[in-house]
Amino acid sequence: MPVREYIARVIEINNYLEEFPPVTIGGNATKLPDDELLDLLEFGIPIKWQRQMQVQNFEPTAGTLREFQDFCERLEIALDDNGADPKPKQAAEKEKGNKKRRRNNRNDEDSKHYCMLHGHNPTHTTEQCRTLKKEAEKHKKGSENGEKGRKKRNYNPSKEEIHALATYAKQAMKKEYDNVTEELKTFENMSVSSNEDP
Image (tube, rainbow, N blue to C red; front, side, top):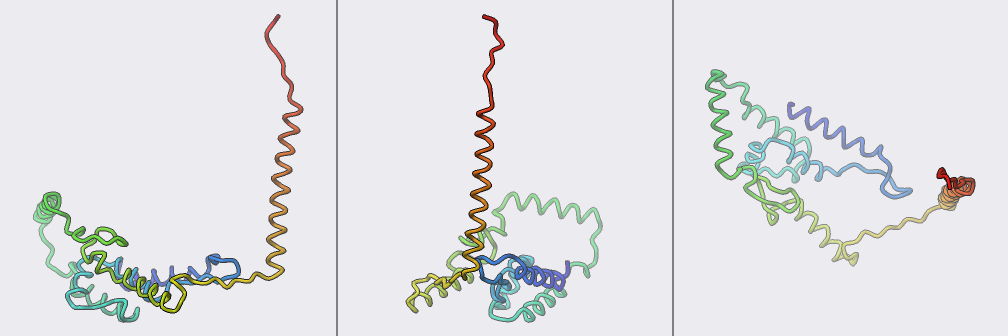
């Protein structure tokens, strides 16, 4: 899939998040902010592109979605294997077999590092994880503001919402009561009979 289509599809799916039910009653459903979306997009691209980002000191979450897309499109063109001379089929199969053997004999290069959040990966450790550092900064700022890292929920339901919830609970309890009553009536109407002769 071309990188332009990949990014467009992820953005489209992100926009659908606003159509989902809210997390809290009376709240609004939200989509991912751009920095989290960029972090997600970064880990969805090929590993050799991620390495090129490190080599070129490109920080995806520091820029915009457009800058990320432009950078990835340049990488797609520069690292495209389709423009190279095709190898003979036999040589390509032999090389493929060698790669498989080599991968089994050595530690997987894709799992060179371990991050508590992202697992085994080729790019960073837990201490180097940008996502964890951002979350720690958010937590630290919240603690400095006296919030102690917790978001306050200022939700005051309206009388209509409370009434609707009470009505729903009452109907659910009545339905459960009716089910239990029906089971008791069925039990009372049961009879015990013996098929054995005395």
